[in-house]
Length: 160
Image (cartoon, rainbow, N blue to C red; front, side):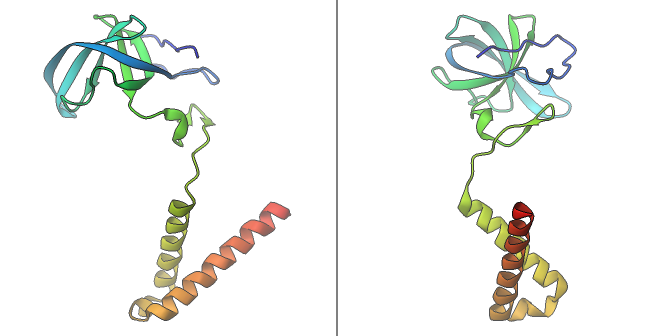
């Protein structure tokens, strides 16, 4: 996987370019504390990656990065101490986010999706009939009907 280097004006990557790569922190060469007007206390880590590159990355906590930790480089520009990076501690390809117009595939979680749908249905029923707040049985019945209708509409749309 190729790492995209952007220039110092932080322009977004071009569509189709890979903007992350998994790396391992080999050594933390130093940590400097400083204060940001927007974010408060910040820390700049001077880091040596396993691939031999030196660079810096900012974080809000001093314990954010450790030696041996797997990270994903999500941005890299030339800095005063090697490269200036942005890291993610989770694989960005597993998240749903827009990569300059190209959406990545989100890992599915059926239980989470069901919880979101149930919450939506209950909210819709209560919005239409606030009096059902005190009638759990009727509220659940109406929410289930709404979820069934939603599923039927989705199937009709997929088949039509």
